[in-house]
Every structure is written in C-alpha cells, then in structure tokens.
Amino acid sequence: MDPRRSEPVAAASACVRELFADARVVVVGGSVLTDRRTPTSDLDPATPRAGIRSAGKTGRRKH
Image 1 (cartoon, rainbow, N blue to C red):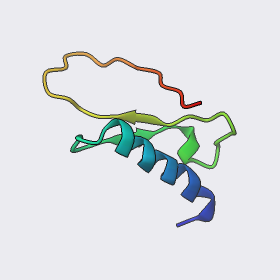
Image 2: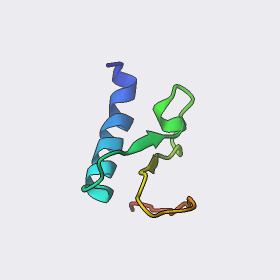
Image 3: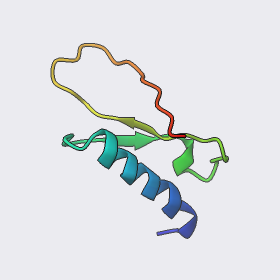
Image 4: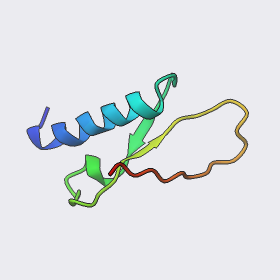
C-alpha cells in the first residue's frame, strides 16, 4: 500500500470499528482517501440499514 494512504485508511478502519461495530457493510468515501486530500479532509462512512427509507447525514467530530 502507498504509505501516503496508510494514515487515512487506518483512521477509516478505527472509525468503522468504533461507530459501526455491528455493521456487516460499511462504505467509506471522501477526499481524504485520494491524492486530493487536505489537512481538513474528512471521512464519509455510510452503512445500509434495514427499514431506512431515506438517507441522512450525521456529523461527528472527534476532538
């Protein structure tokens, strides 16, 4: 793996383990996973859930 990508991938893995521990599928996107990332780029995790009819976005910040 490209060493420049290992830090955001590790952060995405930690985020998924903490916030979606019981999820069977989590899709992570966002510019942080690309060469266009900046110091303020974020992770965009999403998981499909049974019974949800519309998607929403919840912001979470770790201080």
